[in-house]
Image 1 (cartoon, rainbow, N blue to C red):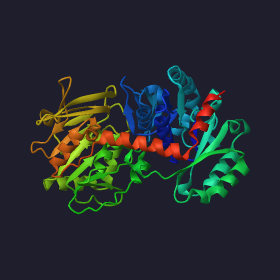
Image 2 (image 1 turned 120 degrees about the vertical axis):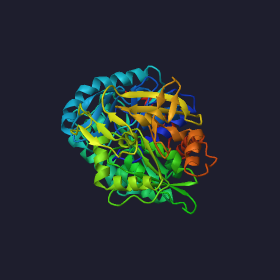
Image 3 (image 1 turned 90 degrees about the horizontal axis):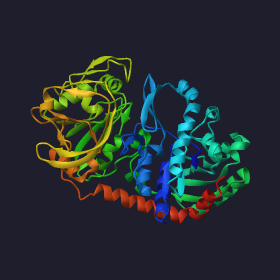
Length: 484
């Protein structure tokens, strides 16, 4: 099990790289994260959902994602707290304090999923959440040492040297841990090192002297990590485009508080002909060739946040000038005339006016739609593969000009009469090279030769090679043989 001295220390990336490393050795590898908190989710083949990071790790291991790889997923919403997903299915909502009381009741589901994976694996690589140093949350823990203790799984701590204070973070974690927990710590590794690794030899010695823990290696910064999907919004905001902007079309994305499934943007950010601008709160939207409204975990609260920023005015002005607007999932719902939530599924607000750029209305009701989809965009017939993940039904005159026809014959999405405003419930469109090329042509940009899915495979292979060079992969594997 890999735990971190804090959030965003690179746990997901390390586990993904090790999944590919050990799978290339011929082992049946499975990723596992007992509890995840993220609005960046993936749909499994059986119609469930898990954290996007676990889906990437499954891909690295060469297996299909399963709901059992992430049995508890928390999706932050609004003042009602987080949506709680257990083994792929929504079971309710809980505020932070209520969830602390709820956690112990979820351990049976976590252990059930772990057992199911164990039946079909040679090796399970487990990712913790947050940090075991959060001892105020230790009671009832299912994400870190609570799970490790329940399964007697050895733990390796990951420290991020790039953020500074890595010696203190590792030594401090040891200082606050109960002895029963500390007994399961087999060692540590250092992530994101820049420069001459030998300069940290004295640091390794000091960590060993103060903790008694073994070092499994120092991993230098891996630049291509930025080409893999980010797990959460922190990773999204940290990816700055440093290429020149001359001659490139501009895609502006308002970053809303509950942005979801933002890995939709990743393929576009790798295209040389466009500049993807993430518009942060506190400033007007810049001029754009396309305004892209991404998915949201709580559409009405995010729509109200968009209006509070004055971005609704900017978007409508952009549309009046003939600018193009694309709404995906929650962004699609915002484009309509009204958005209703009579059952208060996402917030305490029952009805709001939308942006009025599409002649449609949405009602948040019914079961959550979770499924992979294939189809063709209309009217040109360009194929695509993606997935749907949403609550709500949308209807109205502009649905008569659908964005796509799905493989089951149903029509999906809506388009304005002039074709400049488009809404769709389909995620993952731009990971499909054919559909990404179509979008870029729509805004007058040329597509690069990027083969996105092949690029992900290349980066995962490179990451596995990087970890092979800098970690004691045999030593880590030996820990699994001595489990329990």
